[in-house]
Image: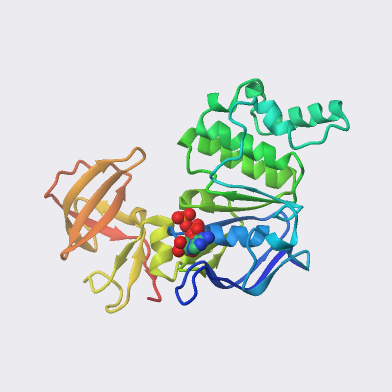
Amino acid sequence: MPLLQLNNVSRNFQEGIPSGVSGINLNIETGEIVTIIGESGSGKTTLLKLIYGYLIPQKGEVLYNGIKIKGPTEKLIPGHDEMKMVTQELTLNLYAKVFDNIASQLSNTDLQAKSQLTLQTMEFLRIDHLAEKKIVELSGGEQQRVAIAKAVITEPKVLLLDEPFSQIDSVLKKQLRDDIERLSKFLKITIIMVSHDPTDGLALSDQLLIVKDGKILRQGKPQDLYFDPQFAYVAKILGRANLLKNLSFLPQQNITYAVYPHQIKLNPYQGVAEGAVKSIHFSGAYQEVELVIESKVILVHDHQFLNLRTGDIVYFDVDNFQELAD
Ligand SMILES: Nc1ncnc2c1ncn2[C@@H]1O[C@H](COP(=O)(O)OP(=O)(O)OP(=O)(O)O)[C@@H](O)[C@H]1O
């Protein structure tokens, strides 16, 4: 039996106007890392809240280990006892020390054990050096990890993270990704998170859910969805894909293809077709080149750093065309 099961779950906020989520069917296994990706307002947070028991479905049911999850009115403290949710509004005591924020989750029956577990948890999340600092003195990324430490010290089975990467820079992002992987691997915590940035989900997840207008449009392994997006929305959200139709170099006309920017290879001398360089922007590992091809602007990631100028004509080849359903 899956750890979590959502059977035809719907939750609408305004009668007659689509909002929230509808018709969600989903299974999550113990220890999985699941990332929910979608545009703003697509229903990601609503889905997390339904899993946690902060919201109750109007239709369908959410089961944890086969047992229906209680809604907020059925419990003294809303939220499932074996889950913890870290929201974007981190509920930390800003003027208390890191150690005390985390330790506050444990009872005072055994003070030595409380202190030891707090230390262990801080070490696990690599924030033990911050123990004596107040929360106000920390960066956004450090605060995020304190909030996660505070959530996991009580050993939840499921950790729900709403946009854990939103406030942090790329170095801290890498650390947080590692932490999330270690929580899943060593503590066997099932992790369900919401992310705007697909790279986090692609890198970390066993299962990706792509939500649109309150429905799951695609779900599956990151590689499967990336290389077979099926829908323009999925291709766009996972890799800023070019959506191409009715261009002379495409395999067939009247079909929309998704081509990711790194799948177009520029060549000064030969290729399947040519385009005019509209813009060039340095982007670290590659340069982003906009090419005008038969009046359509296409984004290319040029890893060869060709010496291009605006207005140049350049040839290109395409590695792969993914045919889309819409
Ligand atoms: N309590 C509420 N009352 C009324 N409408 C709501 C409520 N909560 C969510 N909604 C609506 O439901 C839809 C989905 O909201 P939700 O917060 O789940 O989206 P999201 O994908 O998490 O968005 P974001 O990425 O902007 O946080 C939105 O249209 C939102 O306005």
